[in-house]
Structure formats: C-alpha cells, structure tokens
Length: 164
Image (cartoon, rainbow, N blue to C red):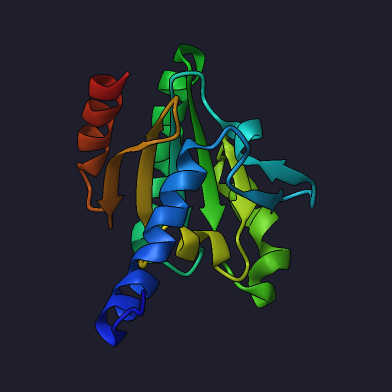
C-alpha cells in the first residue's frame, strides 16, 4: 500500500500524540530528569497516589513567579491526601547555578526537576510557561492549564478536588 503525501504528513503530525499517549499509559516512567542536587528522578519517583500535578515554569517567567507560592500552598494542603506536585524548570544552562538558591529563597517544598533543553516539555505538548497538568493515577491528563493570573489557584484546587 502506497501512502499519499498528505497521509504521511498526517501520520508525522499524529505520531508524537500517539507516542505521548502510550507513554502516559505505560507502567514505566515517561520521564527521567535531574533534580536540584543532580540526582536522576523518574515520573514513578514523584507520582502521587491519586493525582500528580506537574508545573512547567522558568525563573525568567513573571506569571510563573507569581504562581509558585500559590502552588506551594496547594502542595502543602494536598500532600497528605495522595496528591504530589513536581515543578519542572525549563531554565537553560546559564541559569542552572542560580536555580537551587532561587527555589530555596521561594520556600518551595515540592520536588523541582530540570528540563534544561525543554525536551520533556516538548514531548508532553507543552508550548508555554507556566503550564500546569494534573494527571490521574493511571497517568492520564485530566486537567491542562496555561498561564497564571491571581485567582487561578482556586480553579486548580477545584480541579484537584473534582479529580480526586
């Protein structure tokens, strides 16, 4: 069977989506990144019992900086209820030495991982920061939110509670 050019283009565009769906449903971790102490961490290491909240952010992103304290509060509210949070910083190589002191100064209690080349961000179809994903215990994305404005934390809390 010979595929037409438009079919090949469609397959090329859909393959990452199909691949991502397979990764989200797989038993194996779908990412492995270094934390702030250069230790390798997988999705399985940070996965919550009921939900996992993943926040893609960067130190140069002003909305990200406003969202971090609010996400930290939500983390502390839900951490003992089977909901885990992980921040994935997309800061580039030049900002890596500043990242750990920055996170400490912000008082962030949840795990922060580094996606220096934005590979995981791209694999997950995320195109902007901040972007927050809530995944259920099967690894399916049940909530996707781009950007941050004051008050969004209420909407995020509501979605955590609805998907719990």
